[in-house]
Amino acid sequence: MNLDEIKNRLDKLNNRGGGNKSDYAANFWKPKPGTKSQIRIVPYKFNKDFPFSELYFYFGIGKPRMLALSNFEETDPILEFATKLRRSGDQTNMELAKKLFPKLRVFAPVYVRGEEDKGIRFWEFGKMVYQELLGVMSDEDYGDITDVASGRDITVEVIPAKETGKMFNTTTVRVKPNQTPLAEEASTVESLLETQKEIIALYKKYPFEEMKDILQGWLKPADEDGGKETEQVEPKGKVDINKKLDNLFD
Image (cartoon, rainbow, N blue to C red; front, side, top):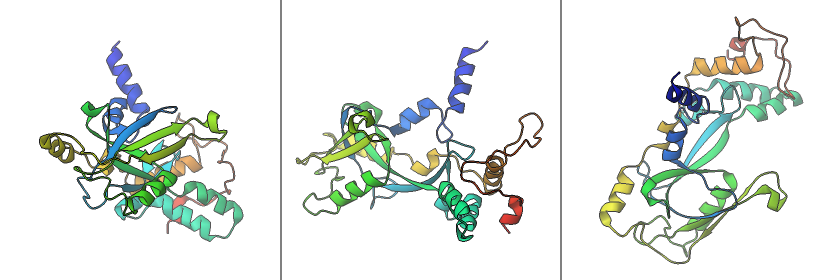
């Protein structure tokens, strides 16, 4: 028995975006609940005018997450289907459409103080943190907080849900008052900026037909042994769909 191969297969099953756990740790930074971290948002190599990348994902539809094809300005079968449901005017259809529409996630390239040896990684967050960061960066009193020579670090704190009584952890951000360089050596700064990866390339892009098959499987689950359809078990709040998906995309 090859234990390394077993671990490798387990990593692939638990993967995010087509990579294993080690890939995730190398490319992404996630603040830990109950802790404070000091980070620096840096200029993004692939869009030097704007450090944030907005990506839309489907969650829990046959995969932990899937990139929406709308990120590539391409026709997307799940988005088309959700749009048809919403336009039907039926309340049940509209409730299902809400579950199917892609969700926004935002990514920023960051340099984590105390973990400098790990280089630039991506921090992923949602709309509320994004709005707070944009509010700070639009305030002229702060200046360009991503400037490598005179920018500002940010303190990120994740407060556990059990401490706030909320359903989810709460993330707060506080910009440091002092302006500081990204790193002391110019060669270090150059290396950090030039060795960045492109965020969208870290996630698998599923083709139209495969996404349509995944959606169909999610709507009408089948037995694994032979693909014979079982008694249909539909997601909570889902309308009974008798038509084939092919017809819905006409």
